[in-house]
Each structure stands twice: as structure tokens, then as C-alpha cells.
Length: 296
View 1 (cartoon, rainbow, N blue to C red):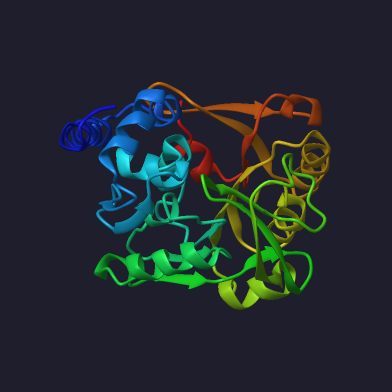
View 2 (cartoon, rainbow, N blue to C red):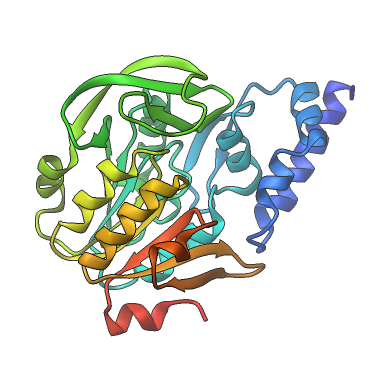
């Protein structure tokens, strides 16, 4: 075990290097490396207030994977974050970050003229998001302390304290590992009824990361008028088949997203079978201006 001072120095050096890295690959491997576990444990840094790449401060827990990757890299999903910033230029007035966690995606996509809406049901993360939203850069951001679904009420949320990004609603959720973690009661709102008052007919985009609950959220987004694009995660084969049908019925183009070395890598999908082995997807309005912004 390293002395505390040496571990803190080593972690600070790692943060300095990682934060400046332009690479999209390798963030997960570095964050979860056993050496990083040893440094964090020896440094005795339970929490840390760090800065996102947008300059917004955020207070994170270092034993939480999501908190640690933000502390190191200043973001969570580099390819998705870069893709949102590229596609949202000019014609998106409203950005929805559904399953915000610490705000590692949404708060890195703050831009003039874009109203950001963060949806997060975990009480502890909401407290941290409120602290971040006090920053002047976040004047156009709004926090919704609830989960979106296809029903209203209060339901159990299963939270893994070592990976808050894997939290999910227990009821009606087919996510793997459904019995692990602490249980919290959280507010759930019907997306179909809730979203119109948020969007108010404006052109919008969304990022959805709800750990197996995407069937209760993504279809409602696709039915909203003036959607420019929706990025969503889906790791369950049965869910992917349904989502393919919904995306195709909406007349949207679908792409799988992967981390290239320097930029996001997109592969167009033409059938439900083409979604196999993929987890992150982009549903895109077939608009010439949007298509021109796709990374080549």
C-alpha cells in the first residue's frame, strides 16, 4: 500500500494526464484498473470536487465508477458527449439528459441557446446536481428529480453505491443483476404526459440511459414533435427488437455508436438483427443538415 501523500500525488498526476487526453478509447480500462483502485484507497479521498470539461464543478464519490471517471477525465461517455455537441449545433433548442447521474454528459453539452433538462431520481445525485447548477454556466439548465417511465407513482430504485450509473427501477425492469444494491423509493412520472410541458413544441434532442427501462421512455420521445435525434442505450435483445420497430415506424435512421480512437464511430443499422452486439444507438431525423454533421 502506498503512503497517503504518494497516493494523492499519483492520483493528481493521473487526473492531469487523463483530463487533457483527446482519446475516446481507454477511459473504462484506466478508471477500473487495479492500480487505480489502490491509489484511491491509499489516498483516502472519499469525495472530491472536480471540474467537468465544460468548466462546471461537480462533487463526486471516488468509489463510485461514475464519480471516478469524471474525476479523472472530466466526462463519462466521450464518444456520446462529442456526438451530441456536434449534432446539437444550431437547430436544437432543448436537450434532455435522461438518467443524468452526476451530469457528466449533459453538463458537458451546455451551449448558448440550448435549454438543458436533467432527469435524475437518485436523491444523493440530485443534491450534487443542485450544487453544480449553482454555477453561472448552468443558467439554462433545469433539474427534474424524477424518473421517466410509462406510468405515474412512486417505485423502488435499486442503487449500486459503487456504480450509481447502473441504478434502475425494480418494477417491470429486465436489467441483469436486479437484486443487487440498496433500495430507495423515488418519484416516477409518465413521459408521454410530462414531456410536452418541458419541450413546448421546440426542436429537441435526448440522451437516454435508464438501465433496461428504455422501452418506457424512448417510444414516448419518438412520438414528440420536432425531435432531431435521440441517443439511447439498450443492452437487452428483446428491447432492441421493439426499439428497432419504433425507430423504423418513426421514419428515423438508426446508427450504432462506438468509440473510435479520435472520434465517434457510427455504423448504420438496417434491421433489428443489425443491433446485435451493440449497446449505444443514435436515432436520427433524416435531415440533410444533420446527416452532414455525422462524423466520417
